[in-house]
Amino acid sequence: MGTERKRKVSLFDVVDETSVSAKLGRAGINGAAAAAAANPSINRWNGRPYSARYLEILEKRRTLPVWQQKDEFLRVLRDNQTLILVGETG
Image (cartoon, rainbow, N blue to C red; front, side):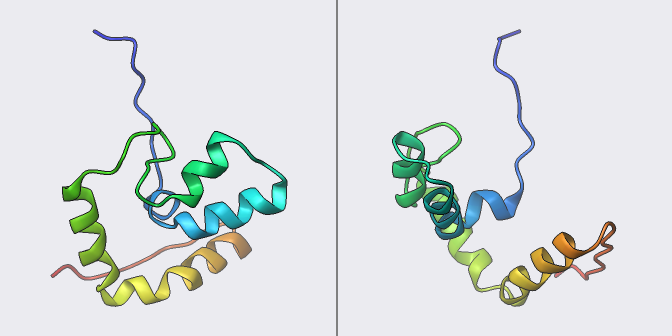
């Protein structure tokens, strides 16, 4: 067994690189973390480029109707202790 640890990562954190760079700028963070956040082709968690497969999946996600409501979901989650989302597949 290796020493690598798995991390649970929110889809919104990984996908929304523009908000990350804005947060880093407001917090005054610079260096490699800011550079990775500013470059959406670099995974900010491991510093490696995203795979072509990941970028293909991301492009498809952005066309889904729920993508348009992402900001609303995040706002409601921030403003409330509990959030229950119900959705249909397909």
